Image 1 (cartoon, one colour):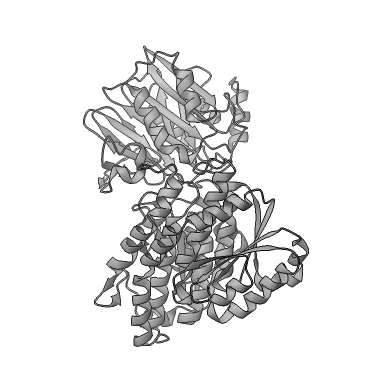
Image 2 (cartoon, rainbow, N blue to C red):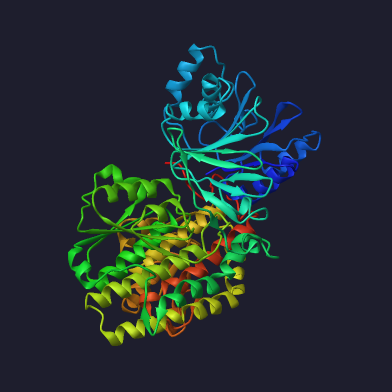
Length: 607
């Protein structure tokens, strides 16, 4: 969740760390800090608040050092304040640590260290790491870190510097992402690529329980036993401007405007000679006959994409699909076996609950197909098969373009499974592919008319509670629309299946209540019109989202947002964009920080 940057080289570390943290602030922004080796001493500057507060505080500091670590925090242990901010420094003042993750046995370690005379100042689990490394340190920082790691339970990405060693620093990871940037006369660590991309495109992707020692001229990677590991260089090939706002006020708007392009990037290369080619994934008809169930696993937005996947795969391929929230999956002792295909969905490829669910399924013999955006991520590396969503960097905390491309990938998989199983005729298969290729143009049409949604949001941004209702695939859309609104505008909203209204939900509808209705499923249109009449009879204001052809919707809804006449089965890829825009404009009207919503961070790398 948090952002980590580290630097060693010939340049001043402070501006490099601050600039890197700015690129990672989407990972956490309730406090920030740096530790610099400065004039034979470790200087720590940290404070509560956004990174701008740290910059203000540092204007009165003279930090000339060329070695340092930095951190931007999403709080897990201890409230956001100056003391709980990272970096944490050991009792002796020799060791400074930044940390992403959760040390689950920190209370036991804290009791042990207090018995040895160590005093704790913060409420964090991270301070335990600083003191533990100090306790194990006898002149060899690498060995002190390795010894300490053997006592830690939980997840971590760590950057560690030592007052006695101005020529090197150490980093390590387990279940939290960390990369190493390889430069000339300088080297880096970071939680994510954007932090160091302006300095280098050559990186090492650290695996679990790997430790790295960095000097300005050399990088060495070791396993938990201290044995050196040879790593392959990963070359980052995307443009640095992909992680910039490019003139937009917010990353979220920029990323929504990129949806047509990234959908083309995800769909078009997978269609050759009119047929779907899922990269190097080989699923034959014989393989499918061995699969008696599919599990789809994800968190948040990825889970909602999975709900679309369940509806679509079951309907087209006629294979039973179970959809699971990753954080619940392994605790219910799932009956996964070698006859199951498990589809894992994650934008970052580092979502810890999802990664753990993947490992649990793999251990039980299932075949793992992951749909991820970040190349080389942990989930991608752990999977048997990977289908990348070519959405590019997604910086805004609220996911938009990644969701659209996840849906596109799911449809590619669903069509291919249905065709190979013989449940989709060749004519229907080719028609579905052509319809999918037209999706980016449909999204362009929606974005070109975004002002009508902006106007509606301006009229209703003071709503206290908003309800989303839908049926079938539109129910999945409703869940995602409701989540987006909650995430960035802080307006209470709930999503319900339209047929559930009469089972209690309708009691919440009163004069002026705002109800949002995705209505893209032709065979359910009459049912949804009846639902609209039910809430309208009780004073609700209704905004409907439907295809242009559905003129009758305008007779019952107060406002209709039209999307092109897209086939119902793939309409969610287009119909979600108006819901994203609605959430965005509601947040803007309320004065919320769209890209950095309170209490949230982009990549959830803790359980």
